[in-house]
Amino acid sequence: MAGPIRVSDLTVGYNRHPAVHHLTGAFAPGSLTAVVGSNGSGKSTLLKALAGLLPPMGGGIDLGGLAPRELGYLPQQAEIDRSFPITVLDMVALGLWRVLGAFGSMRPAHWTLTREAIATVGLSGFEGRLIGSLSAGQFQRVLFARLILQDAPALILDEPFTSVDSRTTADLLGLVLDLNLQGRTVIAVIHDLDQVREHFPRTLLLAREAVAWGPTSEALAPPMLEAARSMAEAWDENAPLCPEGAS
Image 1 (cartoon, rainbow, N blue to C red):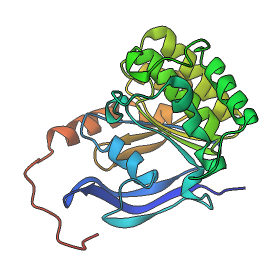
Image 2: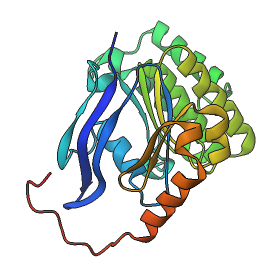
Image 3: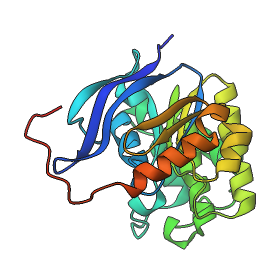
Image 4: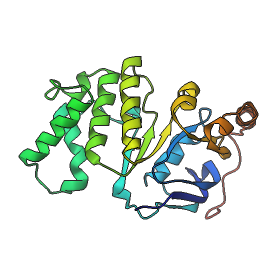
């Protein structure tokens, strides 16, 4: 069984401008953690680093024995080019890359699994539709169907419920909770604090560094939220660059 996903003195950023500073902590196996904070607080940057899409500027990440391909990553919709002419069926089937590899071919059993994943997210009948023709909520269901096919033990979700309707949010939230009950570690950027309080037992409150990381009732206590607001107001977007190689 995999161990905790740990970050140790982790600093991550862009062009030597840190977006996450000296973060240390762990996501326990099978835990359900919300990552919250103001815009620009480093939430998406942290998730990209965990997913292996952004190299650390300092410190390190220990996946607890998981290979990078064993992480299921759900990006923000804005990061996906929906003008590419690919159908729902083929888009979801991409979730099987961990099984098939770069040169594997789809067999009838694989197409059956793909259609089952599409049915699970409520999109039966949409298999032949181009992804560019879908609503935001429908496309998010497609991304979740692809995630289901990945069958990954740890899921990294960047704003999974943003810009979708309330019914889609409820359906996808239920899916996330079910996946977590199956023993999967879930780390998700969430903006709705009421949703976090109701469904996520643990919270990482970020303001480019950890303000709080632990049980949600403690991490989202008023003093912690006020501290995060104060830190956000003190950000200096014109701060000097970090020296080359600095941690």
